[in-house]
Length: 318
Image (tube, rainbow, N blue to C red; front, side):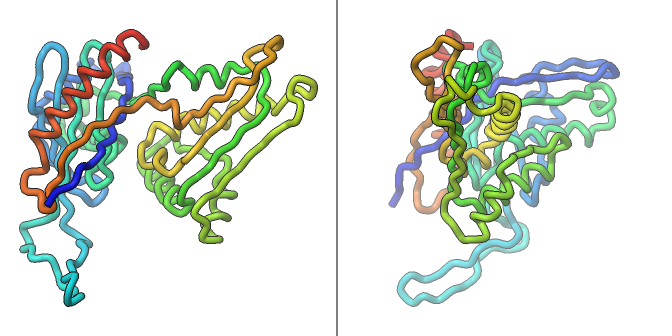
């Protein structure tokens, strides 16, 4: 018995910044292929994470991430007798999950499969940092910061910030409790914390056990009144743009709608949905009831298909 799983793929651009003390400025594919990263294993957020490069050529680098959980494992249950018992695992075994990535050297874009059971993109970055910092040689030679920048379709994020007047702003959050937990988890590993102005309202919704939280600001006649204050709404948009980089946060935000006018003379309102305009792709794999190989070959084949399909679109657009 098997089922078809729709796998989401985040597409992000890569920005590497090296300190003035760095003597080696590696490219991102060189970082992935470096022996201190490739085929290494580190503990990240209570998961044992292994990364390996499975294919590398002039166009792209493909890697596979394997995550193992060996603590706080769930029980199993007999569906007929309803008897609950422990999983039959010895001390050397755990539960394994996998996800695939592809880095396009020409586009400087990373295609990263989102699998909540494995690790999200921000934790993969933490894995890389851990590998480098554990190397006495590299942590001195290459001091760098990696930024994974969200790609918005049609540059809608920049367009939202360029609006002359803002008529309305709305954010709708799905499962407020989950969002609060994910924001806390992400911020625990960041120096520059994510600031979301609506967290108090979202906390109220969570305390009420609400499935949704919706916050909306609106003016009746933005052309006459001047609209929502630009110096107040633009920092909110920037902070949300930063938060949308993290897939685990983004999956709990249903809608971010911004409506306004491009310039003083516009007569028609421009609606923008920042969540809907985040660039991503999908592939489908057939998942067996009991996985035995993490679907590695299928995932690699699928990420190649995503790359072939999305490359001409992104090449024309970036």
